[in-house]
Image (cartoon, rainbow, N blue to C red; front, side):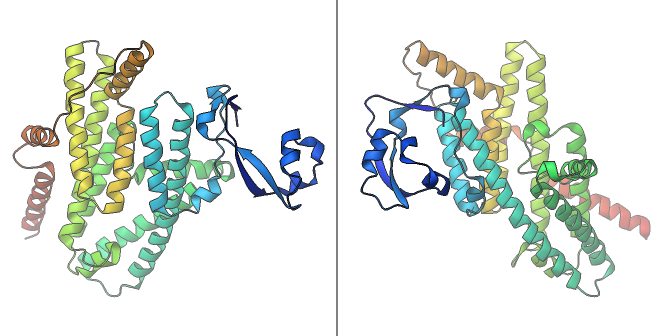
Length: 373
């Protein structure tokens, strides 16, 4: 695995089943010590020495092999995978230079993503079946139902392409996958670095269109078919408006990051980083309004984005330099959450973007109805 064992290492001897391939090998292939400890063992089992990580060190940190079974990870529950990702991220934060920790985060996030995709595919199948059973909708309801059916059909196609290994996809499949991923990007999970102007504009347009269709729905039970029991029109529309705000804020952070790269003026950079810090707090507030699962996944994604923010990287590199030089670690004064929240609210307009968006849509609807009259 790319590690060497320390001289004073204390082995942990475990009895394990023999690998079929290993069982065919002769004892001469094993070390003298292992031959000795295996003399009294049944034929299909062997004693193997394992070592705690405290007693090993990498031969070459860049060549450490991750011995993680992806198939086993993918079979785990989403809740357990979320725990793994959070633990791995915590370890990676403690030791930012540890390449293996970063690899583990990537592997666990990949497995979590696969599990989410599998669950999403099942949810889409159920939703499509329920929507297809809905009979004799009025005109306004039919418009919304047809839009959702089209959306779910596209998303089912996308999930199937995402679950298929890349090497099995044709060039046409890859192009279709790329187009659908761009169109149906998840506002919560999409990385800030990917939210360019084209993506932001398209997402805003799609969300506004769906909000308009949803607000005209007359049968409230349609929303329960889509999102579960107890979901009202107000709850459904509010969730779409939250996602509109999330895309809006991610786009502004992306723009600030680009501006930081392009300017050498430290005062400007400091101001832009300050704005980003407030924007991240706003994202946290919005994520807390989503469902528990979505909120937790969003928090993981947010922390990962924040690690790749320039100010965070600078802070980490400064700490590493201090440790290398033997200097005492600086104690940073934490800003209270209430103060950050207060700044966040103070810097917002009197009415939130979400409320303005919904009011604007209501005004447009009234104008359209007046024209019809």
